[in-house]
Image 1 (cartoon, one colour):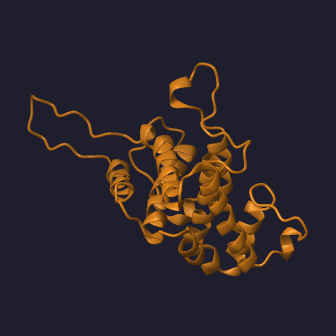
Image 2: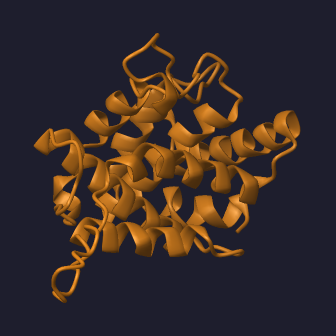
Image 3: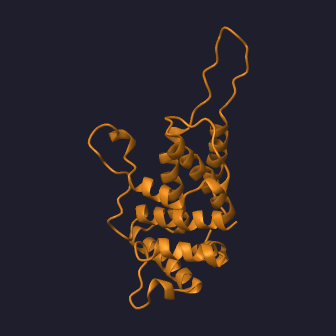
Length: 208
């Protein structure tokens, strides 16, 4: 997947209401303009800025856009996987079939997309919808493990998801010294890139 194709199929495809929401979410926290005010930035200008951003990430980290996407998917996976219920262990005393929780079935579907060597924008959108809907269920239901969830895009609250991701701690330090999973101090790093991709793709989901 090229960064140009990705931007064309996401940012340039947005209806005006979702483009304006995306623009407000990205500017100035993640993407900055020296002369233009946020409201003056057109869809085409934002698209160009996003493409430039992904190119700078490649120059700084050595990771091309495919690798940036892999890191993005892995980051979402690390946040969501430990909160998805697993199938119960079989009871040796009976032969009742083991029912895999619905959330785990969808999670496994998302993992099958993540494991693909070559990914399309459409597959990336599908992956993100499953993962963020699962994460949203965790935020809304306040449960330790998600067994069922709302797969409707209407359940997604972009601000709530982003705000919560910023507070995510490393799984290995939960209950101990706080160590946040994402370091967003550097604008041109893979963690910040993950947030930009999340915001863009969530707006694409809502646009559909």
